[in-house]
Length: 419
Image (tube, rainbow, N blue to C red):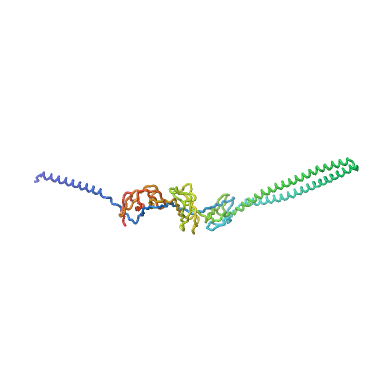
């Protein structure tokens, strides 16, 4: 038979309480100790990173963009008249053409017929002019003959009157005869004056009629020359020395006046159209120095124009080429353009981080000197260039920082390197 032992039960409960208290103390101590330990830093292969050292000195500010070479002079050649495409004489190629090279032959029967009609009308007017001239000259000769006869009669009557007057003074003839001679002479004098006036008027009238006919001839000749030039323009020519770039028509196609038939450009006179990000173009100005990389040579140049608006986030900047073109340079060739904005002197600068924007503060990992780790520090950035950016605060000359994309380590303050 078991006998109850109260003292043993009490000691057992005390031991259990001590065990629980010891466990609580142990867990609390472990928690406090672990909380004071540093978080284990992630390890990064140093060879996969892009480090750079902060420098002090001159920094060249530049912007860069992609672009193409385009002709300075591009000429679209429109159809001068309505017509049908009969023949494509030249096809687009790199062959250099002369200004008078025929590119396309067109036809327009109505225009060609009107040119023939205008020519015949002009020739008919010229024939009418000759006929009128002969007619008027004949009439004028008749009038001259009449005026000459009247003039001769007048002079004869005048002389007769003078002779009779002397005879009357001698008493050989009567005074009545003398008076009759004077009346006849005065009458012929008046008629002579009228005939001379008529002769002058007829001569002026002849010239006026001939001038009017000549004006008609000139008008018809101008119409004929216009029609002739329009017919000649059915032979579409290059207009300038260059290469044929586009010929957007086909044989048999009907075109109206003003339709663009061909595009000709000068391949030796090119410029670069460089597309610069709209966030970087604010400091670009005319006459700034630039360099154009054709991937077969670099051509110096300068900025001449900027588009007033942006397209798809970029602004087109025109750069004139100041150097000779390398071999292989041609219109529409892809190029890289770099524009020099300014030169900064005595500034801190470093390579441009992956996500480093101008005039902003970013977090970069600075490599600890003599250690195999990097600590995250805030860095204030200033003006930027293509590959470098100004450092305004957070770093000193000689500091080494990581420029690679470290976004996957945003939640840690330090990293360790492995080699």
